[in-house]
Amino acid sequence: MSKSGAGLRHQGRRAEPPSDPVAAVGPAGAHHRRRPHGAWFALLGALVVLRLVFHAVFIPVFEGPDEPFHLGRAAMLADGTEDAWAGRTLPPDIVQVISGVPCCPDLSRAFGCPPFDGQGAAFNILRQVPAAPPQAPTRLDHNYEAHQPPLFYLVGAAILRCAAVLAPAASRGVPARLLLIRLLSVVVVAIAIAAPLRRALGEYDAALAACFLLLLLLPGAAESLARCANDGVVFLWSAVVIWAACRRSRSSVLVALLAVGPLIKLTAFPVAIFALVWLWRERGRGPALLGAMASAAVFPLQALRGWEWGGTVEMNAAAHAAHEPLLAAMAGFARSLYTFLKTTVWLGEWSFFRPPPWWLGILLAIGVWCVLAVRRRRGARHTLGHLLALIAAAAGITAFAVGQYRLFGAWGGLGGWYAWGWFPWLAAAAGDTLELRPGFAATTVGLLASFVLLTNGLWLAAALHLYGWP
Image 1 (cartoon, rainbow, N blue to C red):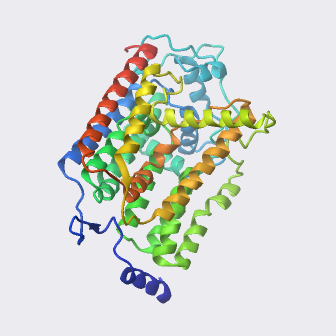
Image 2: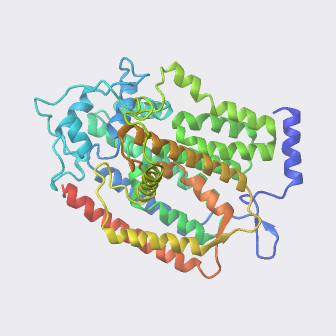
Image 3: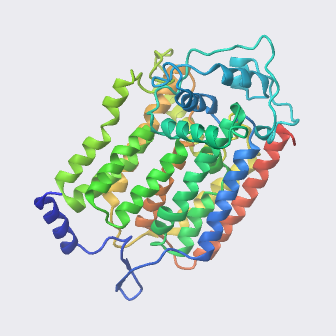
C-alpha cells in the first residue's frame, strides 16, 4: 500500500470510533469486544448443514432449477470438451439421463422425460438411473447458463476431476456428478457458517443471530443453496466480504474479494457495492477505485469468452413489446415481486409445488410480527453502504422481472433463490441497522422456530406427495 493509503487508513482508525462489528456498545456505553456465539450457535449451524445435506440427497435428479445446465458447464470443463470455455452446448450424457428420469413439466416439454407420478423419485440420485428411451434426444445445442462467469464452473470441474482420480467408481455417471456438485454447494455454505458468518453474527445480540440461523432452515434456503448452482459459492463469498469488513482487513484483501465475486455470479454486485462504499469511507478514494476496477474485471473476461449477455432474457430478442397499460404493468410487476418474496421462503423446486393457501396467511403474520418486533438501532453505521446495495439489488430484480415479461409475455417468473446468495450481507444489514425491541426477543425466536418447523413439515409432505418414497 502507498504511504498516502496507509495514512488514510491510520487516520480513519483514529478519527472514528471502532466499527460495530469490532467493538459493540454495551449497556453502560463502554466499547467492548464481542466474541462469536457459543454452543447454541454451533448446534443451530449443524442443523442447517444437516438440512442441506438431506436436501441434496432427497431431491430427485435435476429437480433443482437449472441443474442440468449448471452441471453441463462444469462437466464440459472437467472433460476438456471442445468449446467448454464458451459452454454453449449441453453434453449428450446429461441429455440422455434427463430423458430417462421423472422430471418437472419444463424438462418434460423439452426432453420428453416422464412427469413425476408420486412414486419412487425421492433419493433417486443415490440409485441407478434407468436408460433413456430410444427416441430420446442425444444433444442440445443451447445451454442458457452459458452467460454465467466461469469461476464456479472451474471449481466444480476441479472437484469432478479429483473425484474421478480418487474414487472413480463412486463418481462415475451423471447422477454421481450431480450429487458431487450439490455437496460442493453444501460444503461451502458450511464453511461460511462455521467461520466468517459465525464471527460476523457474533457482533449482534444472541436472539437476533438465532433468528438469522433459523431463516437458513427454511425450505427456500435449501432449495437455493443445496442444488447444483453457483448461489452457494456467492453465499460464501458474501460472508467473507462481510467478515473482512468486520475485522477491518487490509484494503488489498477487499480489492481481491471484489475481483472474485462477479467472477462467480453477477448477483455479487450489490454486495460489492456495499464493500466499495465501505472502502471509500474507511480507506479513501484510491482503494475504492481499485476495488471498482477489480469488480469490473469480469466484463473483459466474459468478452474473451464470447459472452452473450445475460442468458435467457438478454440472449433472446424481446418477443412481447411492453405495451401494457400502466396500471396493468404495475399489477404485473407487483405479482413478480410477490413471487420473488414467496419463493424465497418456499420455491417448490423446479416443479413449483405450492404450499396450502392458509400458510400464506401465517407467512404474512410472521412478517408483520418481525416488523413490529424490531426498531432502528441507535448509532447505526454503514447505513449508506447497505442502502446503496439494496438499491442495486432492487434495480437488478426490477430489470430481470421486466426482461422476463418482455421475453415470455407473462409476469411472475422470478424465483427467490437470488436472495440466499445475499443472505450474509442482508443479515449484516439488518444487524447493523436494527435491533429487537426489549421484551420481544424470546417470543420472536419462538415464533420463528415454530414457523420453520411448520413450513418444513408442509414442504416435506408436499414433496413426498409429488415424488413418492424410494
